[in-house]
Image 1 (cartoon, rainbow, N blue to C red):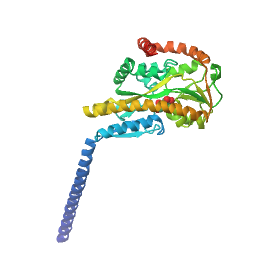
Image 2 (image 1 turned 30 degrees about the vertical axis):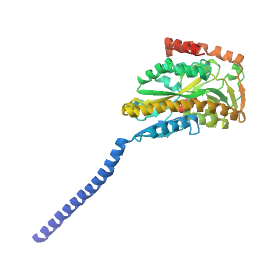
Image 3 (image 1 turned 90 degrees about the vertical axis):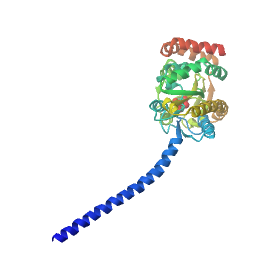
Length: 352
Ligand code: TK8
């Protein structure tokens, strides 16, 4: 009996010993595997930094094509940075993407300035209707002191603006009726960007505005929860709005910049050489973007005239629009900052 017990005990000991060795070996194997691939991965991750760009527009737009230009410029200069472009709000809408940059959970986004006013009110100068009249004036103002001052204010919010890109002059579309006079706006449910000045301006012109993230806009027009929206010609054409909108009204009521924003946390994690490569690529791709945006706006309008009922609001009619929004401009001079608005309006006068 005693012999049997001893035999069983020895067998048990042997099993435990073999199992322990097996694990050690597997640990070592896994360990070495992990260590090898892990170390390799760690090494490559340590050397290659990923820069994900979140865009609201789709991959047919000048915004996306200029982001590809940025990727090309960066990756031809260094193999330590890998740029990935996510379009159509795949990662987040404009406001959420900006918040992700603040937390450092996303590296780059290129939104319109309008949603950014929740973070830096001074960007609201671009939402004052009928102030920027043409691209020559736009370029002078953005490349001047105003452009630099705004970029500095962005840094206080944990995001760094590297360059000005272009969304463009905004035009109105709707599914209900042509808009030839301000009276035609009465009661039209217009989607606006999430920005109090836009909301106030369309209310003052007699419309019934609804603020909404860009990612929800197409569905809202499809389901008729809104009658219309306003965006530059390239967006109207390339996001396929003629499928859900019948009327196109040229108003040029606001010029929207896009701003190339990088998370401060991401920026601080780049070497000085990588920072120089990223900043110069954002600026160079921005020049490419403005040119492409303006060429596309011209060709898009011609295409849209064949797909929608187009009209241009006459200058005299636009006077009624301008008059209606004046109180909104006065009201928001204080929310943006009286001094800064005056400086902006003076820079525009000097540029004209
Ligand atoms: C795209 C938006 C869009 C803007 C809007 O992310 O929301 O209407 O004009 O271009 O930023």
